[in-house]
Amino acid sequence: MTDAPKPVTVHDLLKMKQAGERIVVLTCYDALFARLLDASGVDILLVGDSVNQVLAGAETTLSATLEQMIYHTKIVRRGAERALVVCDMPFLTYQVSPAEAIRNCGRVMAETGCQGVKLEGGRPIADTVRALVDVGIPVMGHLGLTPQSVHALGGYRVQGRDEQTAERLKGDAQGLEEAGAFAVVLELIPAPLASQISKALTIPTIGVGAGPACDGQVLVLHDMLGLNDRFNAKFVKRYAALAQEVREAVALYAAEVREGRYPGPEHSFAK
Ligand code: KIV
Image (cartoon, rainbow, N blue to C red):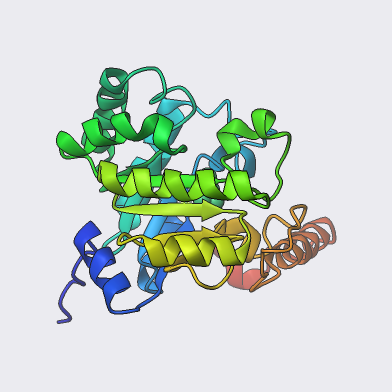
């Protein structure tokens, strides 16, 4: 009998940074993939609000709802034995007031069994992060290209290229650490800036399009598997070409059904 794997905790992530061990993060939206990723040793399953684009076909993450995120986080949690599960809080569920953030994040923690929540933003939401941490809710920050602000940012573009924005991002990262965040996602920022932030912080940085110096990396699962092959970005490496495999398998099935080759006797019951 093999022992159940020891679940990853937010304290383990800090130790991993201290030991120079890279943290492996992928987005995950369902129990089936959660089981596969967990068994492959992924440390954090991030139930990203990108589910609203990737699975639900929306243009942006802005219309993701609390109910939607609770549903996906609950089913991911069912498939996760070792990995830490983090739920992305949707737009307007944490920005209005710390009290409302506590209510919504608390509901997510209680109803899904996840071990942390992720919020977008820096110093302006530091009080909210502190309030959540004070009631025992682990918080992951998210800086750089924050997709819930895509319209204010003028599109999905690299952030922190100019001195002023770079300085602001460094201050935001520091503010999140001081507020008690256990990690911070750095999305689409220049690699040298991500490196400076990673060195300055005690908590781990998780990069996506932020170069190799971050303490961990995250990608959207469906992008790196080549399942969502309409999405192309410089920072995404495709580790498989599953969309093509799906198209080929389904085309073969359709041809066999139409030609009466499926089902064969081996798939049928004689009596
Ligand atoms: O929603 C998401 O998938 C994310 C990650 C890409 C960081 O926030």
